[in-house]
Length: 359
Image (cartoon, rainbow, N blue to C red; front, side, top):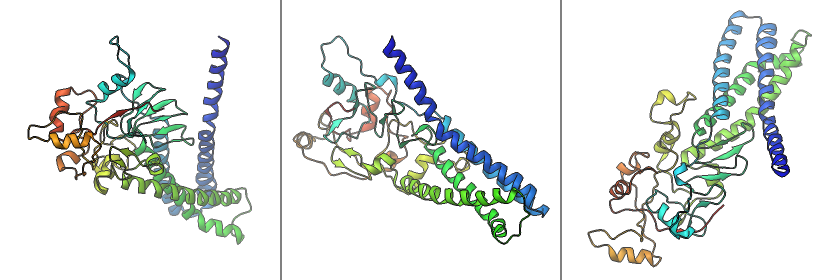
């Protein structure tokens, strides 16, 4: 009882500490609201028209920024289905046999560095493509990008669009404050402002907004590049491994489809922090289609090709057909039956699978 109680206390303390960066951001944003609305617009700006325009635009950007930040923080990351948990049955099967049976008809294309099926020992489940185990959340996260301490959450399939909008609106928020505060920042140094506490808020508001703009701009540009390439941060650091080897562009379908995979098909939802990403987070179309040597040979007599694959021969990849590249619409789901999966494959089945545990 004592060890479990100490672990519970430790986890509780860690959960409190994880919220400190979020609290810091919240305090900065609250102070910026006070400094901009009250000290700059209400106290320092004398022109009524300028004051009204600044306040209207500021509050629109502020609301969108807070909304996107809220969604990024409190949207729970999606985890693999419970049906994919590894459960030993009374059949005398080894773990490798169970893994092979479960993974046989699943749309899994990525492998470990050694070419084995990716399996999480901690969660005891097969990892879908682009899924990784987060050591902070202690869970497997679908299409995990990274764990962000500034939102105290994993950024993945369920909230990556919100994270992108959070970066965009926070950058716009800082740039707007910097641009509208600039003339009053200059007046501070030319003694053009009244000698009140407002001028110090104006001074620090400009410095903080401009510094945050630089860091946010670099981060936002980097993630825009990732979206265009259809990569996560983890995949940019270490390219995903397919049957034929590593391929950093394995999930890239072209700029338009890559963008719509994150933001959706309907333009009206792109700038709004509501979920509109395409797919289920478990399966993703790839630009590679390889034959599986473990599947039965096709009626047209491709036994020699399958035999060559079983002996280690790598098949040349071919471009994804339009019906296949339509984002996730023709990809079999994790809960589909074997017959449905076989029907969708139509001769181009999953890559060959070797089995090995991976944490």
